[in-house]
Length: 340
Image (cartoon, rainbow, N blue to C red; front, side):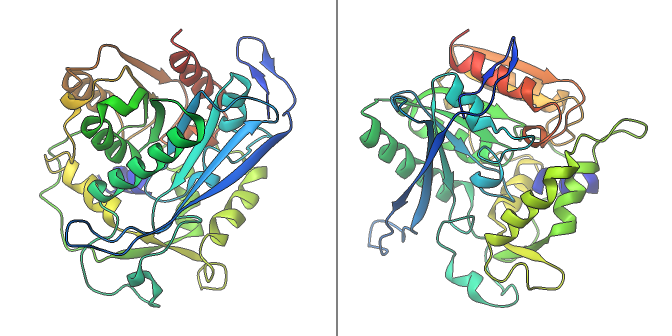
């Protein structure tokens, strides 16, 4: 169980049926979503970073928004080039503009005031799914304004599937197609959510362990070792004091941990039956955070989705977008988003 919890918490380009082409020239554009003070009717809104990548000269009117998981931001996931090519590059090649949101407390977005201290203070976990869903709504409206589209497709990973599921259920009119990658489902294996505090440190060593621990004994490791130092350097740069801390680490909100523990205590923080968009569930064969039982439960719970596909990628874990088997993930997501 501890292993499962640890795993869960913690450019034009490719023709998937014919191999990879060199990465075409792309642009990565940053948008700042300005914050706002709390009012009588709404909580404070933090300043958020929203990034967009497209092949140079390509249209932006087929947007896909990426929602990251519990421990690292968009630049370390959909935009990071393992083996010289990223998931965003592959999506660009298929004609999509790719947008990545950093939730408050992650990446380029504003840090919570509680994260300014040197050690975690007491208090409630920061960045729960309900707040994250409101941040997704802000990003989607920005994308709609920038591109002129009435709906946006979403790819969400791990804990991000909880936040994206909440948003998709609350705003079905804004979601075109939904990809749930390594989704978190309802289980009844934990007794509840203990006091966690607002945030925690995640060390470089803990991140690397996540890439290794789910691979069965006797199987080849899936991590692309030669690219991992650059990945870790980018990860630590998200926290200004991360690399100088001993051990090197990044301050990370605990809201996602609380949401995951709630889900595995029998209370999933969103209702899958409210999702009305066509949905793809895609996960790795060795993903202990999103196993066959989880997916069977989730497929049954997605009662209102007009289409639910389930794709299991062989020899892959919860982090397969950064592993050797990532091309199969790229291909499955693109075929679904194209309606094939």
